[in-house]
Length: 473
Image: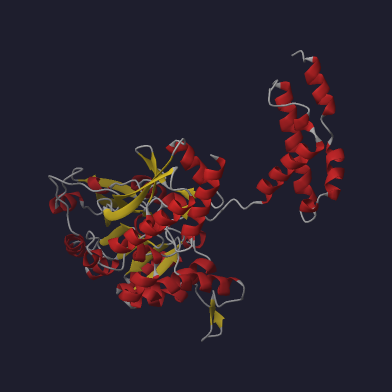
C-alpha cells in the first residue's frame, strides 16, 4: 500500500515509547502507577494512532499527535487498565434477582461477617470441642436443619453442582425416572438431561410435556431404578390441560419400592410467598415434610444469600453424598459459608428475614413506598432541567428474576424519562457508560426506571448522571 506524503510525515512525527515514557516523569497522575501498566498503555496508544494513520483516518492530524494529546490518550488507557472489571452498578430494571447483575444482594449482617472472617483465621475445618480436624459442613448444617426440618444438610458451590453431586452419589449407572414436563433448562444452556448424563445416571422419561400420572412412574420402575426425581419448574409454567404427580405421591411410591426420591426446587424458599400476596411457591420445609430423601435448592435466588447449592434430607443419604470425592471439587469457601450462615440465621424470625434480607424486602415492597421513591426522583430531576426532561409516573410491573416465580407480576410505579433531542437508545447508552453504570430498560422510545430495585444511595447517583448527560447533550 502506497502512503501519501502526509501519512509518511505523521508516521515520522509519531513519538517512540521511550520518549513518551520520559514525558510522564513530569505528570503527577502517573506517580503511583506501575511502570508495566504505563508502558503497555503507551504501546497500545501509539499502535492505535499508527493504525489510524495507515487507514487514512481523517480525524488524525498533527494536533492529535502532539505531546499533550498523546499524554491525554495514555492517561485514559491507564485509567481503564487500572479500573476493576467487577464493578458496582445501579439496578433500575425492576428485576429483583437479576442474573446478569449479580443476583441477590446480601444482608448487611452477612457483608459484615464476610469482612470479619476474611481478615482473620477461623475454625473452617477445626472442631473446637474435640481439638482436632473437623468438617466445614458442620458450620452451616445445624442451622439449615433447624430451619428446614431436615435430618442433615451440606452446601456446595451452586445448585447445578448440588444436583450433579446427588445424582452421581445415588444413581450412577442406574435409572432416574423423571417427568418429561420437568426436563428443564436451568439457565446458561445447562439442562437437567445434560447434568444427569454427566453424573453417570441413566435418564428415563415418563409421561408427556403437559400431563404425567403416577402410573407412568410405576410402570417405568424396575430393578435398575435408583431414584424418582422431581424438578420444580421454577423458571417457567405449564398451564391449561395439565397434570403432575405431587411430591407426597412420589414419596409413597418410592417407599413401596424402596426407592429414593429427590426434589430439585431450583430457586428454593423458606417462606410462603402466598402470605404476602404473591404467588405460591413450594417451600423447602414442605418438601422435607413430604418425606423427600434429598432436596436441593439455590442459596442466591429467593433465599437471598450468596451463590450456593444447598442439599438437605435424610441423614443416611447425606452421609453418602458427603463422602463422594466430587464434594471436594464442588465445596464452598469460608466467605460463602460466612455469608450463608448469617443469612439463614435471619430466618429464625420470618418478620426479621423479610425486613433485613434485600431480596425478600424488594419482593414484598409496598406499592406506596415504590411510588414515593419514584415521585422523589422525579421531583429532583425536574430541578435539574424541567424544560428538556419529560418525566411521567407510569404503572408497570417488576419481576422476581433469577429463574424464579415466572408468572409473578409485581405491581410497580415507574419513572418514564425522555430528553428532548436525545433518543432513548442514546440515553440508555449514556446511563450505561456512567460511573457507576445505571442499568434501566427502554420501552416506547423512553428510558424506564423501576424504583423497586433501587437502593437508598442510588438516587443521588441517578440525579448526577442525568445532570452530566444534559450538560453534554
